[in-house]
Length: 352
Image 1: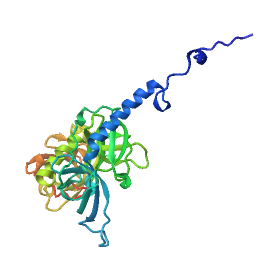
Image 2: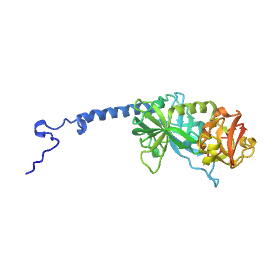
Image 3: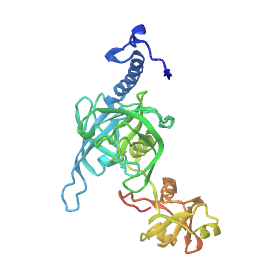
Image 4: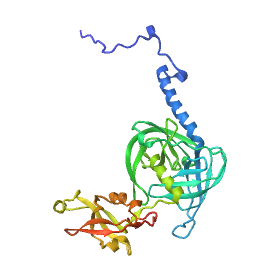
């Protein structure tokens, strides 16, 4: 007869009794962890929640294709200075003619659009009121994957909605509505929905570490926020100048492969470059002599392997500064001198 011996001895409930129970029927050890998690979330919400606002766009400057009024929209934001500057997303308030902000305490105030930058999807509003609570900004550069984060906003108009999750990944990239890349984004699984845009992503220490901006649909739990250190830099420029200045050379282009033999012959750093699809009349590219069909491979000695590389090098410091631009034309390598101008910053334009 075969005797079966249990590998693991089960506890003798009659001898030891049930495990101790905490409040709400949770085992005591789990209750301690649950309370620590709850305290972190509650503390963060109490610290930042009073600064979170609901934003409603009631009129826009631009009309639709048929000349009719374009519908307004709504989103979230947060006061980040005691004198009433509010940070939010560009796509929430772009082209807004009338913006209304609802504070945590129920006050409804008119807001002025200080400036917005569609390329980073950030905007700054200004409100005039006494006793404003301002959120404390943290350091997004110290974030770690797995760290607890909390999102506060107004999804579908439900103000002061709180969700929590973790930092799922760092250094993500998405393309803005203008076609330019948004780099170094925070990925989180803290649930975001329409209306959360522009709201704060908050650490367990009660500091803002990001500005919620986008979700991937129809996926669940793939959400993105702009790091607060990026938002601080952009906000400072918007407050100072009302816009972000970038360089412009006047081409339409896309990433394209370069034949391996050509790349080897010219000692190129990559087998891809930016294929010039079009050259704008009277643009820096036209003045330099670029043509459709050229493939840009470097700008000011910096390799350009993709359209995103070209976006990144065309910064404010390049405006008015002549630089060599290397291209492959047919099978030949040519270098032109180009003088970038300030970008007209037309939202939705794919030109560089």
